[in-house]
Length: 166
Image (cartoon, rainbow, N blue to C red):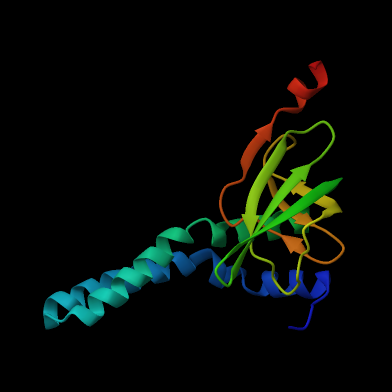
């Protein structure tokens, strides 16, 4: 796999915004059509295809809108500096990538991401971080090797105000 630069990754994501924003709807529409075809033709194959499309459509409901929000923040927002720690878990032959985003004065957040054109390692990276609002969840992190966009909603790990009082 050829590793793409951060600029190439961001350009590819920007180009896919229209598609990414609505892919889950197309998948769910395909699932509905498959169910109708299964009933009309009284055949199980369209139903199996519909089940697959429905599962993927429901599981990716947040991924597309997260890409759109990340690219909008990148184009209009100012990043802050922080650190991203990446953990990789392996299921059979599939790797799952988890990022923990740390930034002074903010809560720590964790989310799963899919690397787009780069191969992350299990380590900590200095990062530029874009958030929703001043105290919101991170919607984009960029490290020297690549971009990290949440696949699902990020989970808050700790509260910075609690850390300051201890």
